[in-house]
Image (cartoon, rainbow over the protein chains, first blue to last red):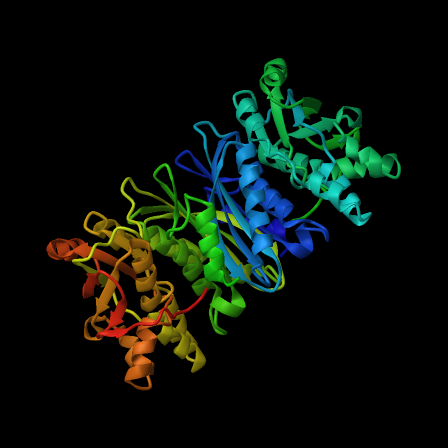
Length: 289
Length: 289
């Protein structure tokens, strides 16, 4: 059983789960576990690890259109080094401050591989789910895609300072709250744009026609992309960018854009079926966490 | 830096943390990470692992005197086996049902060692902290101690069914809520009675005189204890029993006992300083998670 099948099973078993975060009486809760070997390239500082792991959970809160309130982390490493722990905590606290949430502590443990489990909490009276998109809506993306893909290239090239900088994204909590009144469906792009579109399509029972020219690509992608095909892959399938992908009625786009504190790009239309990029079928491929 | 120093550092850095759980505007949140090599003896079923790992976090909610509302878990294993995952989820759901909380899902991941991170949420208007005990109060324990020590012996002896049964404790959420109006300080006994007393003593700036005869010992301890000294160690230092240790003004003991849905044993007195068992200094020793 791969992770996607397992997650589907989890969602089916638990009615409160199955979206970016679970909802319990207006309280949003979401948890993630990250591992050194799969989530933190060599050169990732503990400050960046704290920022990014807590940020990933805050991004799930943002994807529900909820205000983020608090986060906790369980930190496990082969040895509990004081400087590393302090740096991790600084990163966790700083990313929470960046979205007006409070980092309220956690658990510590020794284990073979550096592992972090983060949980973020939020509040909303009107959550935006993955289901809700309608044919005739447009599909939008906040910010720009490909930042993590560029960060991975930077780490590969030994440019660790640049890699760390690119890995410390700002969770789109303010944008999620601002877009919530306008969006019909929303999720974060942590699995990449292609897979996010497929997940929204499945949850909402719709399709998407997306134009590559309209997809906002992060400036750093151009520093590392080898060619156009590589550039497209960096922006659409590598994922972990933690931008928001949402659908908005065409008539509400101007209001949504005015409300959003970050650029909001209309990348295509919601249609009856199929997920296409420039008219060609877009494979359901992406990073599997 | 050992885990206790690291946790102290964490608590000092974060005013909202440092007790059994953190508090954010009446919301209680706590997180734990458990690993196969340190927390689940060979023979532990995934059902028991789900029950126990989620139960450990629910116990931290109980220790604040809070109502438990919800829990999530991040599950990582070398392979995502369908039956194992289902069993884990069943255990997680069942322990939540046992304390009237809702299991609302989580995250899945592959990793080298079976690892679970759980987060539990609760609500309280009047949290009971580790600080607050006064000389003249009495110190009480819910239920009976040594259950996990006996469970470990059962697993060691190859009696896996018995071991699993002993490992599936009921978190003392109902007792915590019932005791909260009477208790001056409270925590759970997850680090063992000896260490719990030292932690309460440090937080409240008091001491304890405890009588061994008054300590409630779990029936299963007598099945496995080799002699009296072993029996005492199983009940006082092995820990992970997830009972509540609380202090209550002497005049409130009858009311506290009447309110508690489980037996409440008065095991000693709160004094000005020192932690003693039968008049002898009780070492700050116990299980370090």
